[in-house]
Image 1 (tube, rainbow, N blue to C red):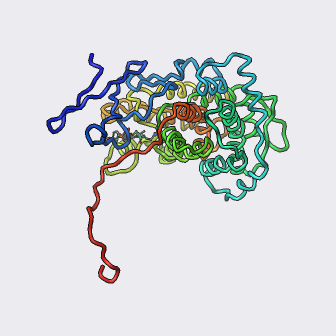
Image 2 (image 1 turned 30 degrees about the vertical axis):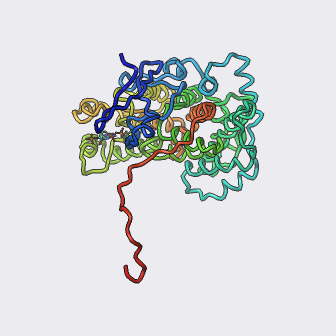
Image 3 (image 1 turned 135 degrees about the vertical axis):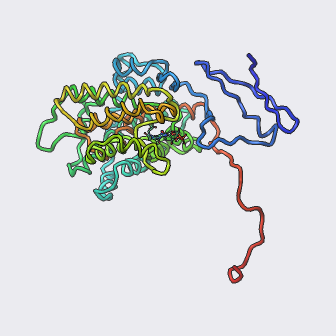
Length: 427
Ligand code: CMC
């Protein structure tokens, strides 16, 4: 097989190297295209464009396969905890016991947030969506952690990473407590990372925090399943913002905003609202299937379809089973789960969905678990952000360590050509 690709245009031939990834993916390296031919490529939505070479996450959309640093998502979801996965994503290897202890202790040592941050939080009306609040608070953190990261210093890089891993769960919990009108709380160093997050979110002021293993295990699994997904919209945002050498926290804040959209992480909230609307409308799934297929109707079946997966999203498979288990373990019967299963069954047998290879994605069942865990619907995407945090950090770190150039796409201009200026009184 040739390791060069040839482009022929206007009687001239241009040759480009072909790069092969470690999982036999091929890419034409067009870095010299413009300088050799004067042309650029156009690819809206970047459907065919690789923005980087990355060693963090591999996914095969045709086979429905996902791996972090070479470990299958199935293995990690079953055998690892979220903090181990965070370490793996960011630093490349699973930690040994000593490394994990150090990592966790370093995080605990930074897990306070400047009191002034509470003023910012209180400045938001209670009606503010927690994703907007989280994005703003993450950005505001920079004011209280003024050292900009010298990425050439592993020590500084490590500290920036530790600081955000430590403070982010506090912000997540505060977003929810503000919404629920609960006093802002801090964590407990005796607890595990995810347990502590749960405690900070749910502890009632007049009650001891009660640990619930089923709840913590489910939350841990959900966070792992969301922890990275290569060059998706929010991750690409984090990388491109960071490529201007903006700091880690503001790059993350931009990623949170990108995640919020209903076509991306915001889909988990949209799914639950859709399922509730279908249930309230008598559970007529056929009516909504017809709406989803009608090109004149903007309605889409939320939680279905994916840019890369053209087969089952492996995360959706795990979450569907987990939803069954968690609801049974907690003794909850949620009629919404039946609506979801009914919709899934119909969609998988429907020619429109079969032809377009539209399968349930990670967001289809996650909201049902979040709801069973007592997490309000508006917080679902915040939980996604909590899970994605290590992935964003890992991708930002990789981009900076690889010294990638500033992200700056080109365009094909299709507007007016030069024309004379017309004074106001003659227009
Ligand atoms: N319901 C109905 N039709 C759909 C859906 C859907 N959910 N998703 C895609 N299609 C159709 C679409 O209309 C198009 O049809 P046609 O070829 O006839 O024009 C075809 O399938 C291809 O869709 P696309 O919009 O070109 O595909 P895309 O890769 O640009 O979009 C997507 C991917 C995830 C944005 C899209 O499938 C979608 O909007 N899904 C619903 C929102 C959702 O669940 N998002 C979460 C994604 S996974 C987690 C994450 O990224 O955070």
